[in-house]
Length: 146
Image (cartoon, rainbow, N blue to C red; front, side, top):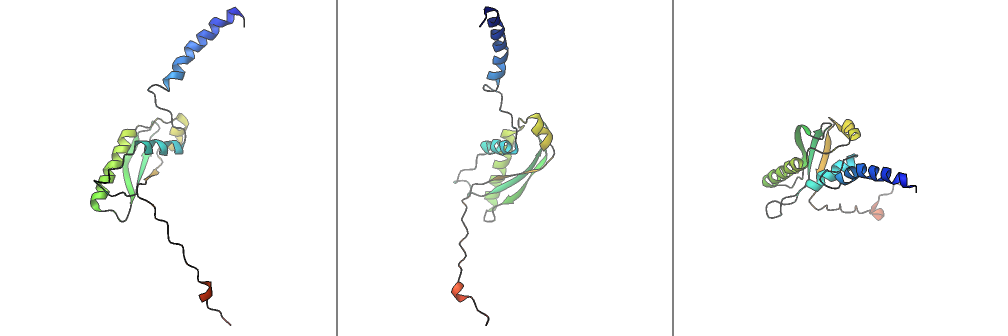
């Protein structure tokens, strides 16, 4: 490489270094998809300990503006049917705390424009799923019409 090109490369590297290290130190990663939004919100979720409430599933519907701040009021749209009133209250508080910890979300410009004002249903699942019992087929009891 020619000696006169080395200062140009060092200058370019010096300009790009803050951009490269800025995202790793302090600046949050930009969210570029709905999947990223769900992952970010779930990373902020801290379910209450079992000593305070039985595990339940809960879903919140929330809308964001272009800058990632919540618009309107989040609404709880689903709670496990077996949950007690105490469990529901404790889990509602935990969901709202997760939203407070995470917002405003660092949307990219494209995602902010696409998601602004649209409601998202965010499920928080903590209870174990019990698979449905397989339906028994009794072929030998099927009546035959002659």
